[in-house]
Length: 79
Image 1 (cartoon, rainbow, N blue to C red):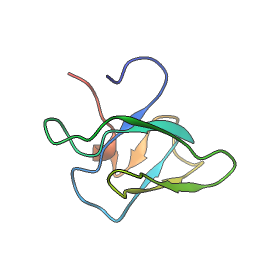
Image 2 (image 1 turned 120 degrees about the vertical axis):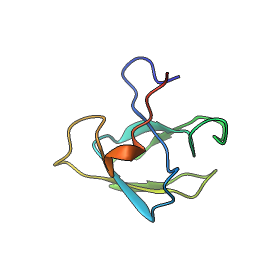
Image 3 (image 1 turned 180 degrees about the vertical axis):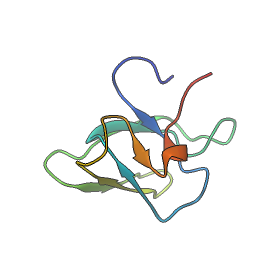
């Protein structure tokens, strides 16, 4: 679930890359019920990472607020 301080992102729109305002986050793949195991990803000092499950390419963007994304629809909010 998207509780606590770790942002969660998804790529239900199928975009080529997602810019995010975090270097540590969870990828859920797509919106449930089509999600994959929620995997914790840590870029470390790098500026990008590819999810090993869904191959979504995430790029750190320092201009985005913590937990934000471009496209904004990629932010996962648990209901």
